[in-house]
Image (cartoon, rainbow, N blue to C red):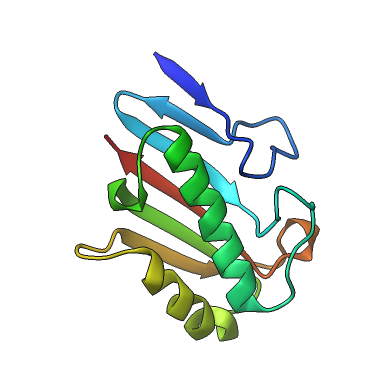
Length: 124
């Protein structure tokens, strides 16, 4: 059985998908663009965008009663691999101890011309 997780402290879905789905104790969080849920705007720098994407993930996890410590896997989508080091510097501040497994890939383009989008899988 699956449960939809919806959080007002993260931007709403811009298509036919859920912010997150819980199934069998695992939470699958959809890719989070760096959109501020209060203003609908995106910051300009990669550091600020990475921070906003991670804050959106964190807020969705909190809605599910979890924290970033529950994350076991992330996928980071970047508009260009030259942004990796700056994103990574911010990313490292959101995790401690055993870091989650991660993939980071450069893609041709992201929705809304974002520089980064981050998704994750967490477990209870």
